[in-house]
Length: 321
Image 1 (cartoon, rainbow, N blue to C red):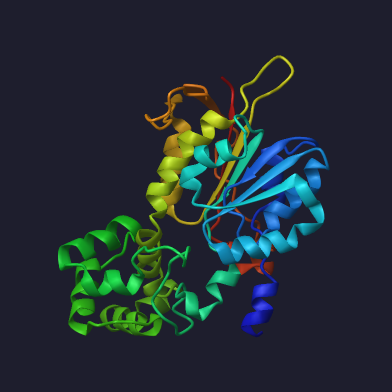
Image 2 (cartoon, rainbow, N blue to C red):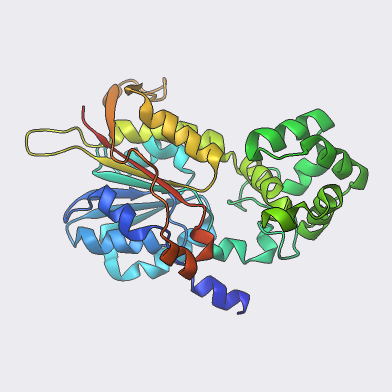
């Protein structure tokens, strides 16, 4: 299958389960904080009907434009915002929305991004070691981080953002091989350190290294920690006739899932409106109820159709106060 064909067959992960936990209703207001390939967004747009409102956010402008084209038939019921979801509260103010019925955060990257060698997300394709989700930004690329960071800091990056085993040995090999500019170069360095370990684990040893680099380049874990309390405060507060807003998060590795799980477990979260605002318009505290005690994972059938779904973890919660 060609790269173009793979890109066209990108499938949203755990689509039915995500919609069920969001409790998408006709006429509701929803946010897809990671529009990506537009699969989840399209399903939500269909379900809310012409009187509903969906806000699609993505920091990858190329992905957002693809979603804009895909959802063009839905007209004004869908808004598109090029931004990082860590700025959720400010985005909602620009949309004049102080309350939403649900928000979806799909923390994975799409097949389109993975299958584009020039983006630098995959060690299976040779390309520049970029990894920026927003290529219009001034953020450091993965190559710049690899080639300029000191040894101890680079070890910490790999451990904290990818739980990389043998991080010290890998970093020493990276430093000895500098400068490194391409995905294949960094993959070969990791392979030289780990040998054939990936044959036994059926996972390439560079997987966690690429994860750590992508995460630090885009500030992914910090963005997740920032967006969650903002999202809770924006969810509709329950009334006698309204059960309260819902949040669904799809994560793809243990570090993300741990943040979500621990955040959902907190009894309440304080409002984190910018101190520069003269008046806070959102609720100061939001109490959540977890909707699934155990994480939801893809079925064997879904994994067979979409192998990249295998590591997906879904957690959902509802605002109850």
